[in-house]
Length: 141
Image (cartoon, rainbow, N blue to C red):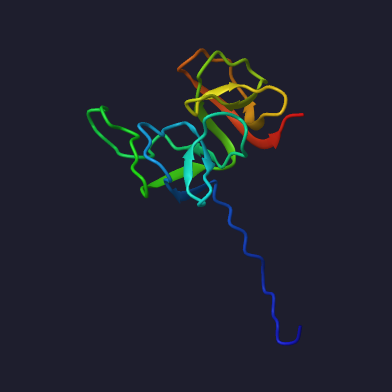
């Protein structure tokens, strides 16, 4: 331990990270993301795997017409929110206070026992609305 000097602590306080897409995704925006076997991110299709986070609203291709917005190809970079409060597109009605996981399209659904949880709903929303969630990752027992 000689000749070591610790003059401070380095803490990365960012709430997002950038990862490469492991698959093509039609629209990744505000959807739940997980890691694939190669360490790339893919769309979550249920709550059976731990979540990385939520793709940002500006993730993917930015098309002013809106026809291809959010589209990513294999190897494209996706910016993902990994902590704090974010917005996840709802795949069903979500009640405020519900534990939220992913449905088959990477959208929010109410979690069941055994699901990995992405967060807690901070708003009540209908299908296809943006659900505000506190990202809190754990597995429901």
